[in-house]
Amino acid sequence: MTACPGQEKLVPEWLKLPHAERGNRIGLFGGSFNPAHSGHLLVAETALKRLDLDQVWWLVTPGNPLKNHAELAPLEMRVHMTSALANHPKMRVCAHEVILGSPYTAKTIQLLKRKRPALNFVWIMGADNLAGFHNWQDWRSIVQTVPIAIIDRPGSSLATLGAPLAKAYERQRVAEEDAPLLAYLKSPAWTFLHTALDNTSSTGLRQKKIP
Image 1: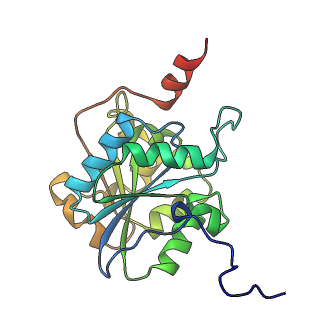
Image 2: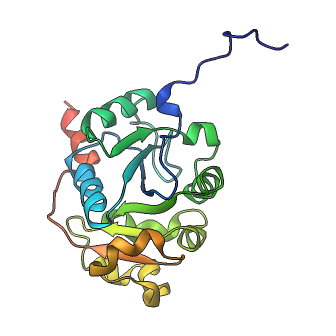
Image 3: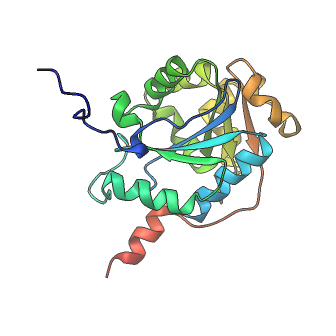
């Protein structure tokens, strides 16, 4: 049965992909953001400035396959809380992964590049995620598909050099001073950006709420 005009189910704005102009440099910052906090914001702000990005898209995931979902707040709540934090004219928050239908970053990036081929994407992540990055499904495919910017996080600076990504793609590391070019480089390409540190963590914030 075909819906009558005006009766189509409306898709919430937070499920839609943000608008961007052809050729824009877009940082993809994925996470459960349970909850989003000042450490996340510092990562996004650092990437925006140091990579000379046009926008940063916070991709709030329905659920991380590698994490326990028992303490996971509802998706819409996390989206709205993240939007309140990422209150910046060049930052956008969405949960488009629901529409894409894949919980895995590798597939999400492939689908985004297919839907928006005229954009220059960079994957952004905090250095605290780097140690376990090789456990992500098809992690090498991610490295081969999109340039990656790793932003320093407390206690993670030295561990970066020993991470499987850093070892396997040592020759593809881009110097910090060349980071503004990252979005235009062919994958594999990655950089590590040192910055001021913020010790806030989602786990710590959740634990504080426990009586």
